[in-house]
Image 1 (cartoon, rainbow, N blue to C red):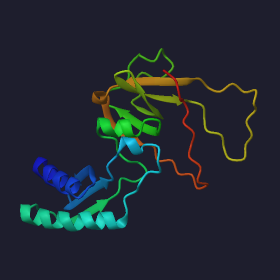
Image 2 (cartoon, helix red, strand yellow):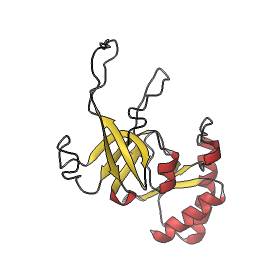
Image 3 (spheres, rainbow, N blue to C red):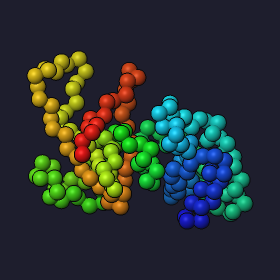
Length: 194
């Protein structure tokens, strides 16, 4: 798999894309996920998205390269990362700071949360923020307001909670798949919490 990863990485980056993930299933499917490279200087602009033509271009080149390398597979699937894009590298965390993410820890968090959160909890959904040398996810346990319901302005919001972590402690991290058919982006819950 390491040789396949290297071949796919060279091919995809040579075409000007970023290799997000490569997965091989037992049925002979080889699934390659690509994205456009992130440029920090363009961080404020509208994000560019992978198109069908991009996937087609990478598919053609990968088919050729995999045949030359003698890689055995039955079907090749090249796609964009989608709305629940995995976060694998430090650059991914930098790129998506401030976004709503789902984090799964390798080990339960233990007693570090002052008893406010179950000690065996491993999964968290919240806003990703840089925290010193590491990262933190900030969330509120307040349930979402149902559409059409009014919330009293006198009501106190639930307190924000934060969990600090390093990339070594992460089993899996993904952008939270939030679909809003009205075209509005969800507001980040915990901007500025340390």
